[in-house]
Length: 336
Ligand code: HEM
Image (cartoon, rainbow, N blue to C red; front, side):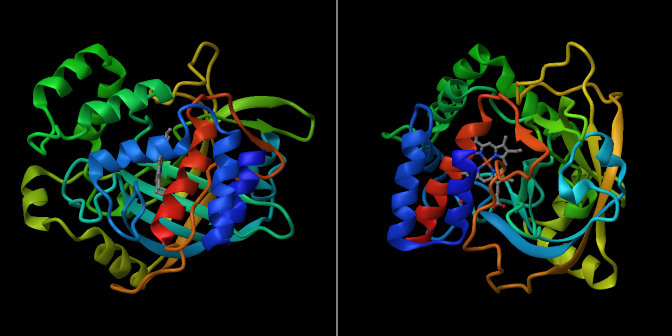
């Protein structure tokens, strides 16, 4: 996994070495180049110094992952073996490039995790609270961004152009439709988080299977009513998490979801039916949240969804490989 290792190296680097590695990442990545993708994202959201080009509003946290051991039949990945207990650093975020994205809008929330594994083993996860991404191919994603870019004459998005593009690209409706029915949550700890992309698990017998995973909130899923949305205002999620975790850990069960024959394995806009078999492989316990106004340990690093341990491989989902190089470009720009 060339790109995964590049992403990992970047987490620990800055300056010239970082720029060099981003160049290498671009060279091994597919078209369009990761720089062009980040340029297109910046056209939609603007640039905000020091901020991520997506998930711009967020808060750092930490805790641990405790394995149930049930994952051992599916994968040799060390954090999912019996008895494994792994420190994690985490970042909760709001989707998009706006660092003031309102918490009371039905938009994407994110959870990124870095498992601190011994030796050379690594596992990072970058998840959202929707079981679907906005687009299933890079071509579709670039068209989506282009349709949302402000008109140069008005400085505003062109509603007619957007509506026409939406009609031609039915898959773009999957994520917003799900969000309208299932969000916004009153707490990050009341949101599920989904891998979205499929990954391939391999067990000790060498058996491979495509899976996805969901982090299911132990507190239960909850959605704000319209009245509650108005009352909460635009900035409550981070303080709510701090107050909650000061009382007791915030917890999620990690469920590995197994597809049935015929389920789409390689499309990030295809949601699998809710009745698919799920294996509870561990619990995530968030025990600390960075204090308000202080940059946390997660600020100057990137989370890389391709940083995987032995026993987990990326699937052939066409959206997956580009994520690491794009995140690296975003990292290099926000560290400048
Ligand atoms: C081609 C597809 C995608 C592109 C181009 C893209 C782009 C980006 C970029 C540029 C960042 C900022 C990275 C940084 O500065 O550290 C980011 C962050 C993020 N992305 Fe994506 N993304 C893609 C797919 C996805 C998918 C499928 C998911 C959901 C599973 C996702 C979830 C997130 C989250 C949660 C963050 C915030 C990460 C953090 O907390 O550090 N992205 N994305």
